[in-house]
Amino acid sequence: MAAVALAAACAASRRSWRRLFRCGAPGSRAPCRLLCATRGLSDGNRYDLLVIGGGSGGLACAKEAAEFGKKVAVMDYVVPSPRGTRWGLGGTCVNVGCIPKKLMHHAALLGGALVDAHHYGWDVAPSAPHNWQQMAEAIQNHVKSLNWGHRVQLQERNVKYFNIHGSFVNEHTVRGFTKAGKETLVIADHIVLATGGRPRYPEDVEGAMEYGITSDDLFWLKESPGKTLVVGASYVSLECAGFLTGLGLDTTVMMRSIPLRGFDQQMALLVTDYMESHGTKFLKHCTMKKLEKLENNRLRVTWNNHEVGTEETSVFDTVMWAIGRVPETRRLNLDKVGVKLHPDSQKILVNASEATSVAHIYAIGDITEGRPELTPTAIMAGKLLARRLFGQSTELMDYDNVATTVFTPLEYGCVGLSEEEAERRYGQDNIEVYHAYYKPLEFTVTERDSSQCYIKMVCLRERDQRILGLHFIGPNAGEVIQGFALGIKCGATYPQMKKTVGIHPTSAEEVTKLWITKRSGLPATVTSC
Image 1 (cartoon, rainbow, N blue to C red):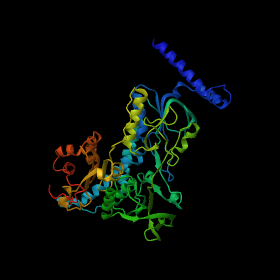
Image 2: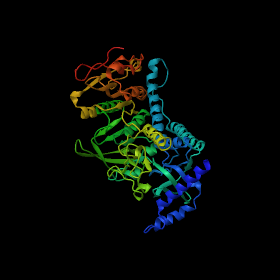
Image 3: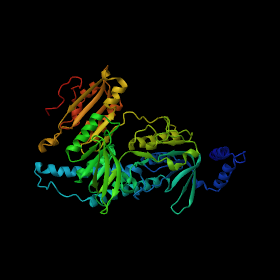
Image 4: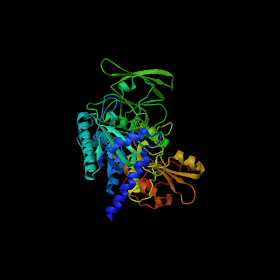
């Protein structure tokens, strides 16, 4: 019976491919030639699923599909940055994003701990010099171990890894070339696009690409970047500027407009206030004009200060662009197969099931329009997609109430709606905002300034006061918000939060004690333990 079923399946597959290429049909000479070209392919290059992109989301999708016994391949190739930086399998998060960023953030926090240590009786020099080379080597070695781990995991699941850049030949066929120039054709029933994005360079700034770097380069620098100008006010910009300052480097952030666009703006301003009070310089309402390399290899930067209407200049060792990201869609030849892109962002348009405009082609992660650019969402979306394709699941990815954290020197974690977005959706009179300024216990002995340590809970005002958003600025914000995210995902209400017994003494327990509303006008500073 099994042999009969297999024979029937093979016959159906052959009929499907004949329909696809329509060999011999009027006007179909090119498809016919392609069929002839691919007819000689071994079954080794035919797959149930091909994932283009070896980042977190793509790898998660591929491994999950392999768990269902499917024949899976991953095609991934890192185009070197304009400065020549390249890395291994794992995508942005592993190589030039979350992982090295968090480790450098931690390195900077350790420097702050040295300053605090003598208050607790440690005879430690508070101004010990930092060794960039030693830190960078240790972090890069860890990243390389993760690269190797991803390759091992693919091998263990019999997922074929092609280290080549792929582009569409037709709806089911992708072509790639090895470094030696050898062509490889891969055919798949289902194709998932998960190529992510790369940092954006400005097109109107002289010398921008020639002399500037991005986050694609920063984490792989062998030598300290020295005096650094970070251009942009995104979370990437503020995170990098924060740890560079914490490592003892002279660091400046150039902002055109508002910080952390898309985040709650009250919280964003508290984040930048803290950074400014702890050594990071800010050039506000400024835009770059040109970047020049001097004979001593330093960089002369010229910019326009729109606040005072002047042109200004200064010299830096490094200029880093953090002005956004562009999706890696340009090299995929998507127009060949009819995959539709957003006209402005050039991201791929997908529906709730991650399907593109071509039925069997899907897209997940940063490459998709309207999705959060977060590693965990890409991972979960990839897993759920594989389960729907091969595991008879119908569960869709829920992109609401996804928690995130900005790893600035004083961390900012949030889940749900910002206050501005809640007002837009429900109206100011229909929401209640509970808030408090608090002082972490760790700040007391050292007499550290806690004026930016702040919590805000945005709730519906009527009936059960469902929590719409929670925002937390303080130490370990990511760990705090991750715990509360489950409750908010499950529809937690303000009365339920008030019934929750906090863990004492922690900063997180301050969330359970919120009682002062913005509407009341009462002082929101916590004065007791």
